[in-house]
Length: 173
Length: 464
Image 1 (cartoon, helix red, strand yellow):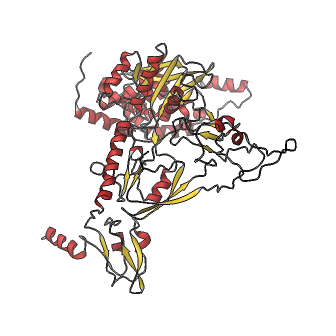
Image 2 (cartoon, rainbow over the protein chains, first blue to last red; image 1 turned 90 degrees about the horizontal axis):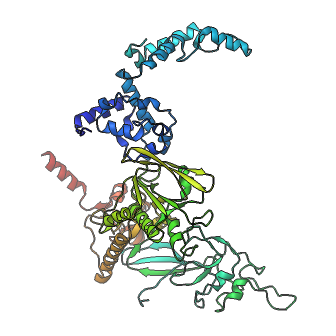
Image 3 (spheres, rainbow over the protein chains, first blue to last red; image 1 turned 45 degrees about the vertical axis):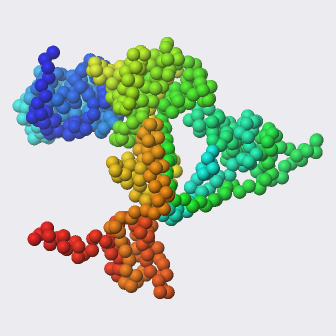
């Protein structure tokens, strides 16, 4: 393993980046490890969550960690937030890191399809319109669901929202 | 005991008046309901008493009677009756005449009274339930309230309702030869010997939700408990979880490394929670910082090192004494470096955990320091007073009395001067804070060193 070089400028930049993405509390972390002891993601083999992810940020290793896909395994159960003795809210740090990853397009290509579907239909994951109508009719419901799926007005609104969000800067849509 | 030492146990401070060299302290000697001049501390009444209530001395794990001796080494070793829990076995309240048995024609007596061979219990006596108030005059006061540990009920993540989750103080009682188990290491749920014991550090300490300070003694006492258990029962597995191990002090780190050599498992990483499993087991959810891996295992007994706090009643005592609190809610010392035993009230000194968490050597050192510094004014018979204090010009004072309740040190009183009341400042109590000076509507109070002329001269010098 290569020795880690400690570079204060790099650390400062990493903390600033994560703070901008909503993880301001990252500097409060004292590395006690309580979050990692209850994190179901870590037990499922996703290493860079909670304590270790925060340590990577606090040692300025943003670029070294950006390809690590563990962060996308966070189920947002918030047990880490509940247990944290320093008010760090580790889940927020994980989400801030995700935003950083997304801003650099460091996310799985399989994530693009659902994003585009969300933009077009208002649903990240859906089956064909016909299948939806058939399934609903079978159980005695009106064929059109009360969501954005068949509602052009609602779809337009979602598109406006997404066009004005940081998501638009990624150029997926 | 030395002839100059008077020990007042089972007593509470009711009120403190006066100032250094001239304190008047009202002390309530609580009603013991047992004649301490006759009581020999044999404990027969405690054995005879049918009441069973949780024993405070054994941290609620054992039981005691309503008549009891606090613990075998109590000084003085005397029994008391806890009247709130007394069942009045003889069918009368304390202070009433005994009922007469129709069969024997003799008075019916409670088991405690019958058991007392020394005749110290007479339940027919009319005793004042409020006890007795005595007043003593003292020159200086040392406050040493001691501490309490946080109850486990605060920590929902550590299954506080489970009997096998205990505080470290409770483990201390379980391990003690005069504890309720007689020194046998038995866990509370089934009185069986545990096979795996878990120690959890920093419970309530170093935690923004409870106390941000480090309780300071937990690392060492947990290692001590673990070592004592491991030496006596090498077959018991001991896992200790620390955020980090803090063992500064002479010989302390050697004691810690010795624990590792004895086969005690030490992990860095805070325990996140406990899960209750069937069969009186607890699943520990922990983390090993060194390997970046979560830890999960089953434990029979979990010991929580809960945070140290001021004991109940310490707030009231502070009000009576005029003491201040620091940010971590202990008594505030005069100066963290140069006045660690003095307080803002001259003549009142601090010793032990009431000033902040500390271990036995530190407490002894501070107590000896407090004793020495408390003896100085008594030996000298005089005290030095700070020159920068306030003084009343009696000719200007209108006697309105506005300053009296404002003084945070109770230094101002109204005194007769030429037939009218006038404010008077006690120089021993005044700290020169200047509240009275700025509040006085007649500008009759001068704070020496901070008169208008002096302040304007300073401004002139700075802006010249």
